[in-house]
Image (cartoon, rainbow, N blue to C red; front, side, top):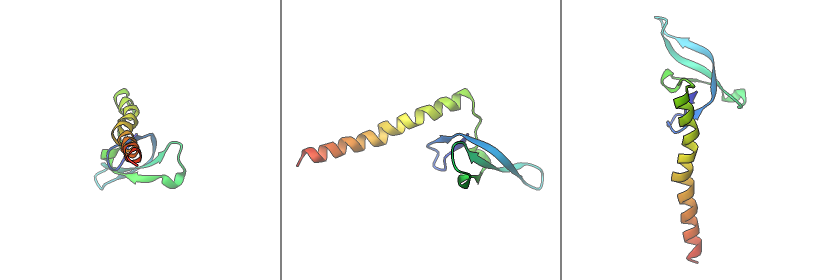
Length: 86
């Protein structure tokens, strides 16, 4: 799993390659996002790659709901309020 750049989503991904520094330590991963075209494959820093364990899977499922409640629903309500004032 790969965390989005802004930290708000977890994407299903497969590590295709690793980049190592001169001491042999990993400093990045080349990932393919499951279900996406290979044109979206990219290098990501180590801190954005997380294990697909039960806790992270639960977070992945809960994030879209959180975004729906905090962004889409208030926007819809504001749109409704504005149109009802006409």
